[in-house]
Image (tube, rainbow, N blue to C red; front, side):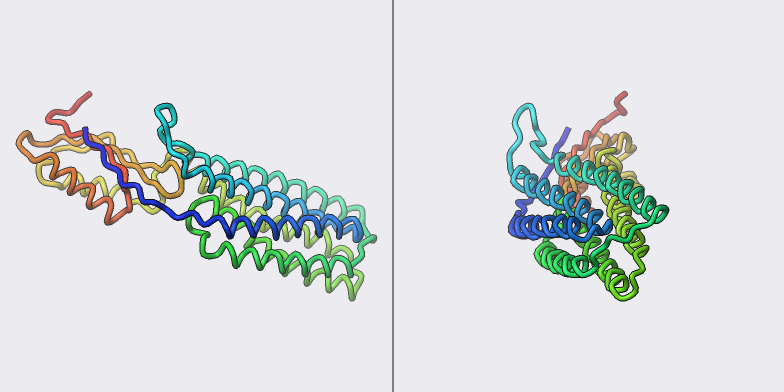
Length: 291
């Protein structure tokens, strides 16, 4: 059996996450104070939503501290899987928040609500938008580093969009006194929560179930291996990820007796590396098919 892997040493820039934690914590405090003064459901809804963002950012920051820790004999993958578990738990938190927002908005639409201080809402909303926009600037360059940074960026991105829409609604309420727009704005927020939840849940569940990564064409790899000279048969081909960066492949290959096995393994690893960024492979070469 031959095993190959090539660990790239990634750079973990935690500055953007840390600054975003501070900014969003200030947003949450401002929104809760604004809700107490204004009695806006949209403000309360987003204060809770932003609180989940802060938790998400803190967890992502903790993961950035953990991912460098090396494995040992009992924990050979160290904390790599923690990234996906954190992202999955964040997605569950998002859907619970969505149910709460929808429930509260429905109650107000049915029973009415006219205690809103729109001036406080608008001021708080502008502070909220400024904080989200600042967080986006700090997280933008790092958003594709791993699943947790992507999750954090998505949280803040959809917050910024919903902020803009909600502030417009509050301005309309200020001039028209049409208070029904407040629960409607809450439902708008929930739509963005659903979007964030779906993307995050899909990505994290895909990895947890050890399905082949979406950017890897399993059939193409299988065809390549099958058509290689000296390879008679390919079986037990598995491709999976344990986090958002590392892709693993294992397979059994039935080969001719007189081939240079080391050269064959190098050729396969070169192809997988260059075409699919697969750096971790375990290839078992057999002269006869093993049971």
